[in-house]
Structures are given as C-alpha cells and as structure tokens.
Length: 350
Ligand SMILES: Nc1ncnc2c1ncn2[C@@H]1O[C@H](COP(=O)(O)OP(=O)(O)OP(=O)(O)O)[C@@H](O)[C@H]1O
Ligand SMILES: [Mg+2]
Image 1 (cartoon, helix red, strand yellow):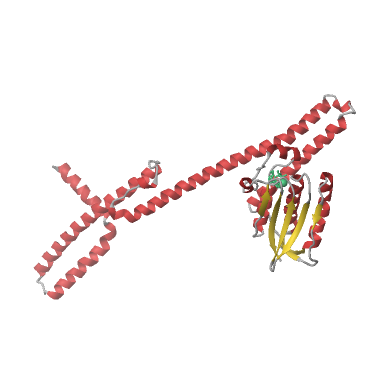
Image 2 (cartoon, rainbow, N blue to C red; image 1 turned 30 degrees about the horizontal axis):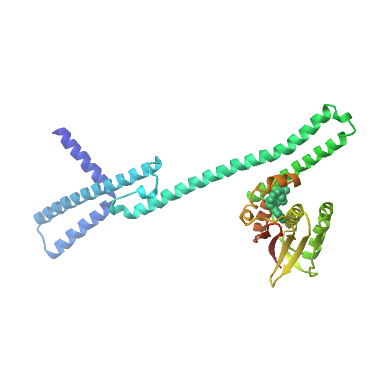
C-alpha cells in the first residue's frame, strides 16, 4: 500500500516536474480567472476560497496531464537520437515520430542526412589523402631508385670505366633534377591548397611578357624539332594578373604542347575582346579523348602512363595550372581532337 502510494507520488512529481515550464502561464491563468469571476459575481470569502481550491485542483490535474504528454514526447525524441547515435538507422525513412512531433521529424531527418554526408565526405577526403600519399611515394621512388642505382654501380667499379662513367653521372643528375621538379610541384600544390600562395595582381604588357616566355622555351621546342610560334599581339596590350604565377601556367601549357606533339607546330595566340584577352596554347599533337579531358586536371593523372614515362612528368602540371587560374577568377578551357591536336586557353581582364 505504502509502496503504491510512494510510486504514485513519484509519478506525480515527475509529471509536474516535466510541466514546470508552464507554471508561470498556469499561475497567470489562475489569478486572471479568479479576478474575472469575482468581478462578475461578487463572492463571499468561503465561496472565493472554495472556488480557488477547485481551480487549483483543476489546474494541478491539467499540469499533470501536460507533464505526462511532454514526458512521452521527450522520451520519443531521446530514443530516436540515441538510435541515431548508435547507428541503428539505415535510411532517413526509418526515422518516425508521432503526429504531434512531425515537424521535429523532418528536422531530425535532415540532421541525420547531413551527418551522414559529412561522414562520407570525411571518408572521401581520407581516401584522397591516402591516394595522394601513395602517389607521392610512388613518384619519389623512381628518381631515388635511379640515383641510388647509378651511384651504386659507379661505386662497384663502373667509375673506372670511361665508356659508362660519365653517362651514368648524367643519368643520375637527370633523376635528381626530376626529383627537384617533383618537390617544387608538391610545394606549390600544398601552398595553393592551404591558401598560403600569395598572389600579386598587376597590369603587364602581354606582348613583351609572352615574347620572353616563348624565347625561354625555344630551347625545348628546338630540341624536339617542333616550331614554337608566337602570333601577332597588339603592342601595348595590358593584361591583368600575377606575372610570376601566370608564367608557371604558360610554361606548363607550352611544355605539355611540345611534349605531346610529334609533328606540326605549337602556337601561342591572344584573341582580344572588348574587356578581355584570351591566351591560347595550340598544338598539332596527339590530342586528348573527350572522356579524359575532365580528368587531366586531377593531381597525378596522366592519360598514357607509358608515353608520359618516356617524356617525363608526374601529372601535377595541369593541377597547378587549374589552381592558379582559379585564383585569378578564370578557368581553363580545352578543345581537343585525337590525332589532330589540342587547344588550351583562358581569359584575363584587360
Ligand atoms: N597538349 C596536350 N596534348 C595531349 N595530351 C596532353 C596535353 N597536355 C596534357 N595532356 C595529358 O594530360 C596529362 C596531365 O598533364 P599534366 O601537365 O598535368 O602532367 P604531365 O605533363 O604528365 O606531368 P607534369 O606536368 O607534372 O610534368 C598528361 O600526362 C597528358 O596525358
Ligand atoms: Mg605537364
């Protein structure tokens, strides 16, 4: 008997506790009600006390019922949140709340979906990071093994063989140059991606600028026997950008054009419009299939691994180009036909 009464009292306490946020409102209703009644019917003191007690009892029962309902609702929400935390749901559709909480159901569902997509993105990032590390180690291995191999052979006696010693040293030096290029590219990529690369935008003379780049690259094109032609550029044409970073873009695009062209020519052109100048690097090389065009800007992506190995390159060039041009608020456009050639271009403000 005592136990039942105690249980009952505990339940009442819990329900009243759950409804405590409405105490003030209920108290205001109570006072207003009594005030209103005594205003309409003048009551004797006994009547007033009885009415007050009755109203209090009624409000007390009301609070009890509200408390009970709130407790059920809170328990339902708690159970759902706990199930989400314990990964018990496979899809948002499995999350169901009673009609009174239907608004909350939509919110909980979108929170569930958001958390899930955040986790998936993190997993993807983790995968990209692992892939990146794998690629970097793989790319580092080639030049390091090369240098190591030649030096060991030289130490094992080849140093005294005049037929090979110089040749081996030249090869080791070439590998160390590749290693240096790769590290510089990696530093650039990491600086751009972490937002550390400072840009310095200025107007510059397009003709003078491209002439000096083309002159620097003449060596490469002559070695390959591919003419590097700079088209007509209007004197005094001023373009806006970071000269140093754009030089990296141009060097990458021109060296690609030369690398992936076996016959014909490489041309650098500027097409002017009212407010912009479009810089074009055009070759008559091997071309790129449509399905590959979106991928060539990915880090380490090379269309033909065997060929690229022969001509050198790690597949970071275009990733850097893309980032630098994005920092200029512009983007690269590619037109290409297999066997006929490719055209890479971007616009700069003038
Ligand atoms: N002008 C082009 N003609 C044909 N294919 C090209 C051309 N430019 C780029 N590609 C393809 O896109 C790939 C990615 O180019 P990217 O410049 O990023 O790398 P890479 O030239 O191989 O190496 P890196 O520039 O790092 O030395 C190349 O491996 C090549 O397959
Ligand atoms: Mg390249």
